Length: 108
Length: 195
Image (cartoon, rainbow over the protein chains, first blue to last red):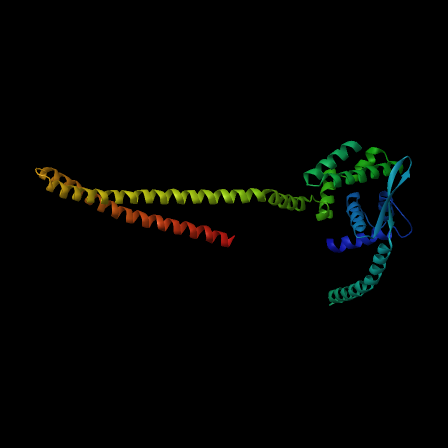
């Protein structure tokens, strides 16, 4: 898949994993695993990127006698998700066109 | 591979890829936390490390994904350093320029005083000629002074001959010096203007 497109999609995936509530690295990977296989080395740059863009906030909280980094979605992140849902509609209509052309073209 | 071994290799690879210390520390902390969470989730340390894959590959993936944000930032500090060097170095530049100007001036003075000295030679021979002829004239007035008069006149003529040759040489030398002075001035001022 086009890496640029995939990268954008994975950013949104990570944001979506924070809709229900704050989460941490390993939990995000586990939540995504039924749908997307995301390695630890892929997740880290996404988290850093989203943090830099102001889409999420990072804080540390104690867990089992150690500190764990939690990620929390910001209003900016929510906005970005809503934008994606909006854009996806137009992407879907593009997909419909491509799909129709390819399938009718193959039939000819 | 133990967790420590994995982290050490991961850090070493990041360093080799030019990632700065602060960023490396953060990335390693992220992996430490990841391993701890995997172990909390019921994995053994060995299993957790195996799930993380190859440390070199992970480091490479980090750097390629992070791109510019992750790499060292030597350019901005280099620029600042260069600016600082120019500011600190500028008085030295002024001093160097003044020294150079003084040296140039000294060279001109040396050359032209040399030329002036050699022109004195011409004057000397002219004086020799006048002295010789004058001396000869006086010697002629003295009885029995003919031999001395001839000798003095001869000396005056020799002085004139040498003086004429000297004069020709001096005219050429002066022209060369004038040309050098003009040329050196022109090149210095041309260079200034282009700078």
